[in-house]
Length: 258
Image (cartoon, rainbow, N blue to C red; front, side, top):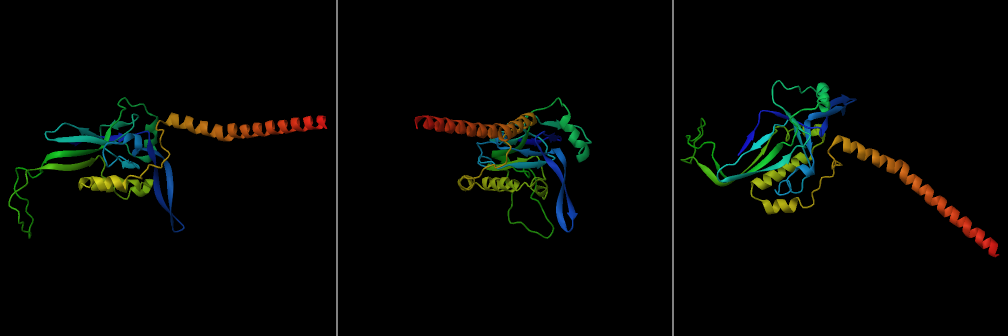
């Protein structure tokens, strides 16, 4: 089974907190800074085994809770997406979610860092919520069925530790790929795995987010800048000087021969 823990997951790999503002009749975004409660998941932290995430294009989660997977008779569960090893949890309320203060959490050194499951898939025999209960009744509505289905033998379930990832909060982080994840989950839940495999065959995560660790990202950026600003121009200049010297040498040899 899958259990949603009463905690909040924070991750150093996160989105900026943004607020919409009206400027001369146009919507502009005020970017505050990194907000560790808004987790963004990269492809290396998504399962390549499940069709939902086999060709992962990204997922942003807002104030997500971790999931705990446990064994259940007749059913199996698997993690779909996880946080990075630099993530951690807040376990006690009240949670400090203010954008102005949350950035300081990025410089903290929590003791409970580690990967957390953020979304999972369950498949197999699942008991009905109404097992052992009477048929639900609604005033003014009659039902033709006479008994409650106790369980389903090949049921499917997708659990995400965040209720806001499919809301209009997607606009705040430009996370259109959240809809892609939702559509893939719907296809998988409807047993359309073949159609899902065809649809996602060409899907790719085009974000420049392969390196997750902030220090390594900074080192990669600095290395790229040095190569582009210094190494390549110097190499071009050196190549030009070598060609110029070779031409002069050839001209001198020709002059001597003449």
